Length: 611
Image: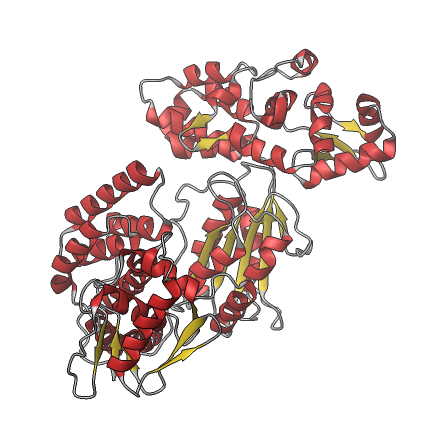
């Protein structure tokens, strides 16, 4: 006996002959029992699948009649058992097409993860061959609407895995027609779109591949208001750079190597300054202890170049980690911390492991991640960690692995030996960064104006990069023109903004994360301008005790909103970075929702050094 739901609901006897079943409602009851996978189905659930919100008064009697008809037609091989207020289908002696589909798909995914692409393609194709058309096509609309999306998602996931195996076998040309149709039918499935781009690229159709990306980006923006994900963006970048690996057709399989992830974003080609800090990170990641994971932490104020240094270091060390590189931005575009489970799921897929069904169990995802990364020389880059709770599940546990973490805060799990603190660039390094991005001839032609820009940016790499990019984008501007626009402290942060690069936004993310007491303290501390002050001075401005003032000041130092100043032993002093000081007036309006510069702080203005 065979029962089928991957197409019209059917029952076939031992000779494969179709068993006639009367009407859509009998097919609906059978499908609901099959999809319950051996669990009892209540009368109420069957009623909702048969009649939705309008069951007849004789509901129970009619359900009993449908079950009786099924028993009569299906015979002794199928057991339909009454369980309390419901029914259970026993399928010990029955073949289910859905169960066969899932078994073949599981074998195929395992082979795919192990690099056995021919076996993977065969098993995944066998699963897809069990699909005979739209699932549940002869049941009530209520059951179809409830269950068909799940079955369709199962099918599409297997289709994507099968295409992945076929691409790995070099069968690009034969895939293009099917992928074109699938992408048109499912325009927002980014993996299919990335696969079509890959196939087109390997058919020497680079322009068409780029057009597919642009069409997908437009659809995502118009329909959902979002940008493409990192997988699609990564393929797009690889097509632009001509670095998608060529794959020759493979007649036989000898490799069982696990997937080698390569998740790093492109390197910062114009990295300038901070070479001593870069060397410190390199030493920490190269010299393992033999007993624990090698780790390096990079911290510093917003915009000081943590991400750029981490990426540059990771690219320089790629050869040291031949088993791959994992990368995750630990915050979303809105600054909110991402869930560790979401990040682990992407890591596992990059490692060739399908975490399907386990996304809601963080402990299970951690176990899988550490199991499949153990013994492998993998570098993991975790950018902009929010706190130790977010970070802990993402850390590898193997001495062969290494992890590079950036964070605005010093995290409890980071030792002083492992931590590199970035500070604003000195003037000479800041000028080099400006010249590298804007053009050395242009900066050399107006050295005085360039120095004014450097001073206005106060050594902050993000500010310098924005200024340089603005010059590069406006060749008709003189350097002096931008210097004049940056000269006024009241409007400087408005000028230090280009596209997604925004100094004010970067600083404000740090301001949002400190306690209310610290936020309330900053406008009062702005009275000191960028000059140094000690806890006693702060206590007078804050109208609190010295001990409470010092506690607040240290919390602001932890958040990289205050800089410690060397004044001698036993007497710590503090100062506000110039660009943080410019952002502080945003705290004077309700809930940090506005950023009107300098409103209500005339004293800070008068104490502010000239730009």
